Length: 491
Figure 1 (cartoon, helix red, strand yellow):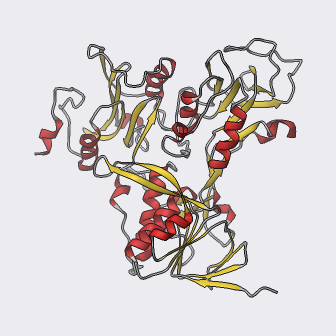
Figure 2 (figure 1 turned 60 degrees about the horizontal axis):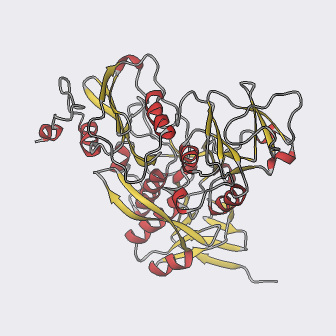
Figure 3 (figure 1 turned 180 degrees about the vertical axis):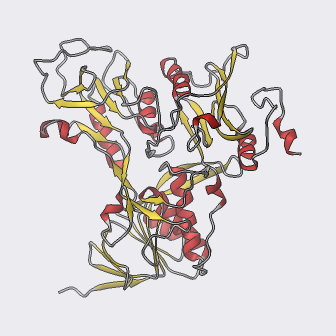
């Protein structure tokens, strides 16, 4: 009989993703003399690198996968348990048990359990079709995707978030069926007008290093919306520019064709061509192709493809830790200090559900890499704070901010960029559109800027961030006029 393995630490972090690693790094930075244990289910961890501050709150960064051993060697008070999973926790005795027989005694713990891909149509077909449905979430799933893609002429991408959009845009030498339940592109981030600007970019991709003619006409619009898309769809990004680091080419030597089906969902999936249904055709392949699966949509159309990529969001993993945590839709409820309902246990990242968000808040959760880093680091700060009774929020939670790229364009989202929380009669939208170059949308309420969407190299992010944070009255100021120098109003 092997002796029981025990170890102790002041801080236990469960999860080797961005939230967990950011939490561990912050704790090690603040509490250099205290021991920190990070539990990772694999031998690599995800770290933030090349962090760049674009403004007071807005940041961009790269995500790298680093050997746990390499990370551990650079931080003296950090110990990483690789290929390890916590299978049991006792909040009263503050002991966690792992799958390899280790008992960990801790003072405080942070659960950074992440989220799993949503698979809403697993039951739409028999077991023969499941092998042709994949999700893209981690390194292993990307490898599986590459292997399938290399011999494929046509695939279906189901979903309308960031991963789906960038995948459709980046694929080469394969026909793509892009299906979504929404009536416009990337509804988690954009309304119909913004989505149309990006659809034009998808249909007419820009060449690397190309410049846009200065004489492109600029459209200016100002109006109130009778119906605004402020979808609560949430999705998590695989990582900044993940697709640029791998080969994502199919076997279609005729090139690539994109076909989009909007406002529809999967009804059934067949492993053989259904004789009672007519197959729709598109792209560079003829009717004689024999596909691995056939998808029937709720709009009555049927398409054959080699395989299906499911990119329909994620489900928080809060239900994987059965210790009495309070959950909302599988997310672990946390207060403004990232604390759960259990003493000395915190949570951060995709797994948590911040219950401190108010209706007036200009920050909200969307389960993004940027937010995982912010939550993880802030949880570390609060765990290291011995004054448990104090409550405060970090400055980064005062304003939603996100920077990414879509279809070759830099995209920045600030504040209530889709008029989230606002009544339709309480705001107006102003637009500045230069086709093929830039798209600017602002949300104004009572003469004050509440949110903005910036597509392209607008150089407006810092100015608009300040206007949202300071709530300066901009009535009578045409802030979308390129001639107006808004910075003068901050003097």
